[in-house]
Amino acid sequence: MIKRLIVTIVLLISCLINIRAQVYVSSGHPQMDVVAKRAFVMGEQACIDLLITVHNSWSSVVFTNGSGPKYAPSIFDDEGNLYEGQYEHASRGIGFNYDGQTYGYQGWLKVVKDVPRKIRIMVKGIDEYATEFTSISLPYMGDASSNNEAKIVIKHLPLRRD
Image (cartoon, rainbow, N blue to C red; front, top):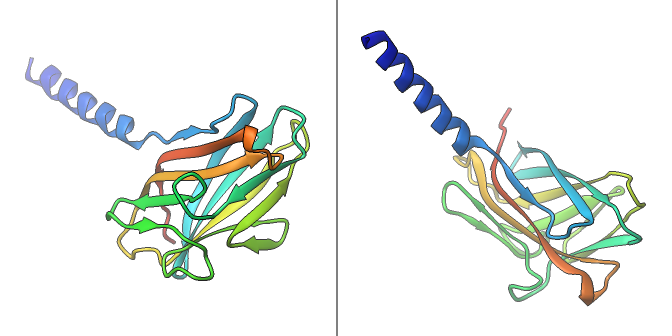
């Protein structure tokens, strides 16, 4: 009887830990898939690798890093820090890296229907104690059209430190 109770409690605790550890990803558009591959620390910056697959006729996805909540990306860590602003100008800024280029303000990711594309989000000034990105919000436009505005949202992405 006591063994059953202990086993039940251990299983319940492990289930609660697994529920907390699940990563949530939303592309913000029904015709776009986003996979959060990894987040890791490299020096004083963190990198978030995403795979983006578009299933419509868009030729590009434009990531914005402008002013105002509509066009500004934001990232929060589990230490309560907010990362926002352009990579080049903010002490805790955000940049986009793909096709060998880093973009601090705005970047155009060329896409082909049903072909995954890799993008790396670079986060400058990462807290030395952060272990997770609790919330990531990345505004974008499909084909630079204001009719196709949306946000990629990611929650509870673990941050690996080597």
